[in-house]
Each structure stands twice: as structure tokens, then as C-alpha cells.
Length: 113
Image (tube, rainbow, N blue to C red; front, side):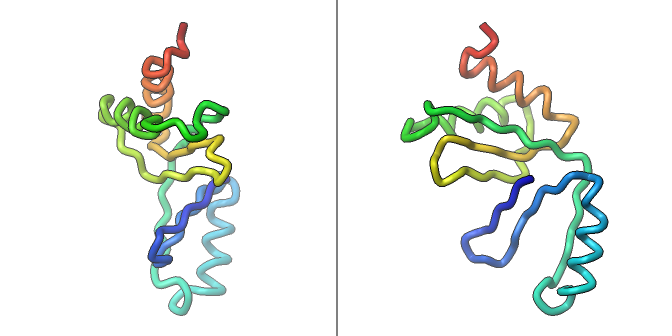
């Protein structure tokens, strides 16, 4: 559903559907653990929040507004990714924080009106 690799290429973060999680983890460990993969961590109960729209492209300060609104609610962002088209920005939060994150964004960008 979502993938992100850090610039040093030392870690990759992948978000999968819960139904696929353990099967994928088992396959990765069986094939790569100890060689390509040094450690495999699983985090359950996360949600993807995505902003999509033409207004994201080239608009200075949008990402800072997004993350300020979310952090202002005490919500930790666990993962961030943006498409090369700059038309989408997605991030991962704990599932329990998803609704509050969406509400914070609606308020910040006037989407509730």
C-alpha cells in the first residue's frame, strides 16, 4: 500500500494490508534474514492519511502546514512519502490517531466548511 526508503538505503518501510502482513514477513525472513535483511520489525494498527490534489504541486509550505497541524494534536508521524508528481502526500500514524489527524487537516485547510 505504501513504501519508503531512507536516503542512505539502510532501511525500507512498507505498509501492507493486515491480511498480508504475516505472510509477507515470513517470506522475507525465509529468503533474506541474516543476509540482506538484518532486522525485521512489525508494527500493527497503523493508518495511512493521504492528501491528494493539484494544489500540492509546487506550493511552498504545504508540508509544514500538514505536519504542524498533526503534531499540534500530539500525533506522531511514523512514515512519510510523496509521489514524484507532487500531487500526493501520504503519511502513517497510529490507527487510534487517524481520525484526529484527518480532523486537524480539515481544520487547517478549511475543508470542513
